[in-house]
Image 1: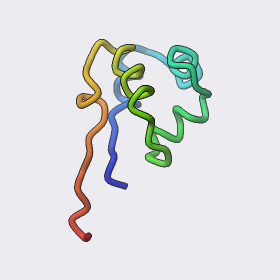
Image 2 (image 1 turned 180 degrees about the vertical axis):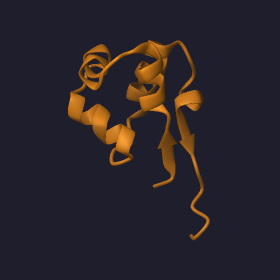
Image 3 (image 1 turned 120 degrees about the horizontal axis):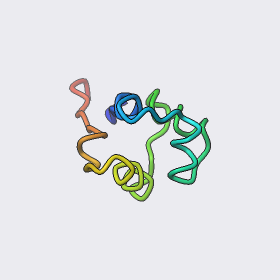
Length: 70
């Protein structure tokens, strides 16, 4: 999947678990887990909410990588 993220690392720095993160941005713990695993790509709105929690930009947390095999 071309969308990679550093969400788990950002959560660790702030000592926020998946459940707390979900509550802060209005989604379930499972959704946070799926985002971290790369199984779910968040909407722009959700990505912005996540970035706001950490006081950073979406680009610092989420990286788009072109698939070199396509």
